[in-house]
Length: 451
Image (cartoon, rainbow, N blue to C red; front, side, top):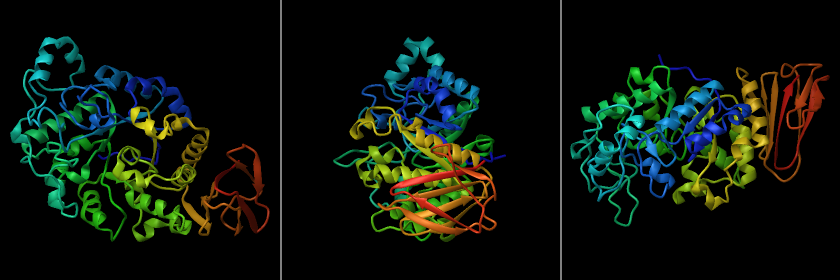
């Protein structure tokens, strides 16, 4: 049976060492996170420790890289379990590493020699399989030499290589033969055996649906939350959504990053955009179904890949967008935190963001409002006011002046009860008449909860 996942917040511990996650476990729990998405648990290059090297696997059968190994992974899982926090693994099944002259032999002769000469260490890092033999050969890859040329062509995108330009031969692209499928299934089952509860499927857009369906069979999917990375520039009617994301959701039963909603958020917070477009974007296909959505304001590709940096929001708008995804009903919100050299270009903007006090308020509201439906009860180009049942209220104002709303209170709030401002902990208002005035300060968000 596929696990039914509540809308609990995921901390994306991007580029964190597994030991760092272990050390921060009590803080992560106190903040209200329910899941932690971790560095890909695989063998990948140690030299340089660049973030992108974590996304170039060398061997599925062992876990060893500069951000940890199997031993530190197990410690982390066991520690987080004590706080009732589950671990999600970022997994890369589309390709292997671009290395050793673009070799298609993995993990390579040097790695196999190391497995034998330092057998005690590698046995401790082993997940499955026989380390005396290689894992993959040229028979397990699509033909080399062809980089993706047309991103509107499904066959081109799913069959050919992701390349970096300037003569880069690209990442060796795996085929879906029975050997590859079996190895990848054993890898995921071994991770589940360690206590992994969910998987983020990297580059899902670049894998055939047949490949994904064979790997993520009933045994792998049992009691597991799986979501894919399928980048689009919108929802229903947009080309990439229709060619890639909609078929992925339909064929696999997985969840996915809610790029349609993210597009709406970016447009709404733009200079000429209107927050009224966020009233109910799913009604016109511009947000994924609540049960399928991983909602976000930032993914690791956005600050770290030059081609995606135009997606970055202004720091204030980013916070307002977090208030929106954590204040609304639906989806599993993901909060990004970067612990590594990749965050240096932005002066560590997201390094300790995971434990910011304002995010703690938002996450607390999100957790407290589980099971409460949402309704936008007032909106303008600048601002919106959204209620969660009769229990809570969210206000957002993106503009530089105070916005006032007067709303009817009938059948919307609990009468003669205190509504507390969650930022200050003070009572802000009581419903004692048929209408209520709300004032939302410039460039700010507000959350209230009944007491």
